[in-house]
Length: 234
Image (cartoon, rainbow, N blue to C red; front, side, top):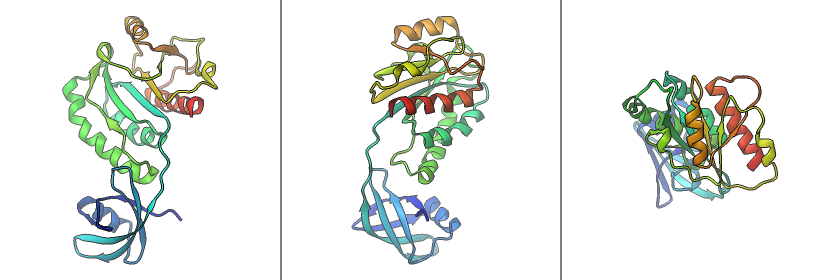
């Protein structure tokens, strides 16, 4: 049975859960004497035994530090914002589970939302990302950046892919067997990407690739693209 994981600080081999994390422990009906895991958000996971549960906090002692595997693949997702930002709410958890490292909200020609609309959403997205790492047991939450216009993005990946609905020939199959540690991917929103945007992305080192013959919803395109990247480069 999986040991439940929480986020907390470890000092002198002791852990104190308060506030929202303590509430989560109560919801999970954690009892004195049980074992839990603690992620300190510094790259460490600890196995902890619950010593005492008080009215507003849980106190535990560290039993051991759990060895962790280093993340080998960094995926930076440049996501053109949909007209309904609630769609992104629903994407944060699955892309966190799939191992996306960074989410960069992008404003493109067909984006109907404004920078301020996105900025007001970031705290909510960060909270979803933080909660998701307890379930999928990642070391660090998805890093969500400030929104950027598509013409101003500064990709850093060794490989850079824009998944483009009008591309019918190139796919990621041609990259099987190649090595890459940092991969940038860009996904358009409703209405896809304008021709001039594709031209500009190519000047930044992006290669247009296809996800297949069918036109996919943004949510489907994102998860499919991430899975393909992980299959090819992991």
